[in-house]
Length: 477
Image (cartoon, rainbow, N blue to C red; front, side, top):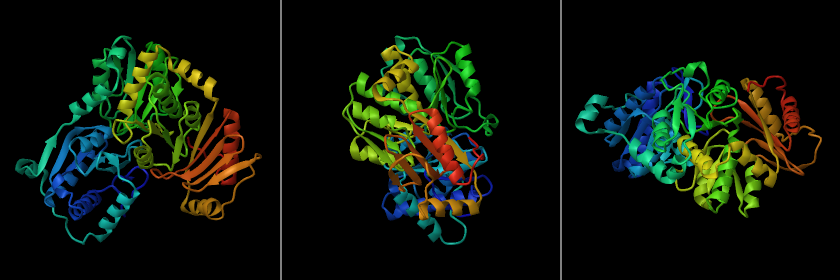
């Protein structure tokens, strides 16, 4: 099976596409690319999460790098993806990688590639890697056994956890948090956020509980994505234990989900809006916001309220971070729970975002629900529904022809302001509201997002698109 990168790196089913041979081919292609660019001597960094075969795959990649005479650093501990991105920047490397499939189901694993500064590899880089993979000669790929590589110094064991934690501590108001004595509960979802996040919060004198902290390659039988369905039990825990906030992170800790003090799930759109509003109003920052096309337009309204702008980009955090770098934006994020803030790494970091949310509670002395109500009173109400559908190969071809080639649309019963085909099909309506249909770049799903002034209106508009695509009654989310 060929290696193809999507919006969040390369992901494949373990034992099908995700195999030792493919991991080795990917590492060999990266080694050749680095040599051709004169970047090999700077070295390469590899980290891994808690998934099945993640540690082994990191070793397979390191063995190939050592065989290609490329100096290789390995973070020899289960590590959050944002820590790996931070480490690429910290060690001033040109490339690095994390072995992870992020929030995908347990039968998946994969690789995220990072470039200079700790950024997600953009499409030009990933296309280049795919070309290098295709050009690899047949035959065995040279590799140095892992233990021998460590013994000879070709593979260096590193641990950037303390510098990463220290960088976050320097970025948040720890004194404000210490003054509040907040009670926080963490749910790493059997992933890798516990050490970093609990250390930060305990240092800030928070009362911290942790659930689902052990390693479980099956993630307790749940999808390791912090959403309204997977966190139902977590909501009860927050209320029953009188917590100020519940913080959950996905499998590799680059996304987060929040439960407020009343036990309500806070949609990632609201988290993004809250933090942007907090940075502008309470911390006095200035600058734009960046969101992908499936993320709330309330962010645009907040930007306009403070005389700023909000930029829209295609799905994929590499587009968000790229636009932030270009515009000097304050914050960038997406409705799936990933965000970053200016001055930190140029990629998603659920751990840093969680620390900043706790700072917000401490500094303002107000609950999440109170702060969000303040925002909607100033900027208006926005409600979103999200749906996901599985499809056959024939259905994918039919839908692509229907929507992207023939550019057909249903009768929504409202005037259309504009239609964009930059990433799927996004329809914006006169007077506000929008709906988008696009194929996921990380899972075999078609996704429909719709945002209107009311939830019922959003659900009806999403259902209209669903019927038009011939997927009625097949929503799995």
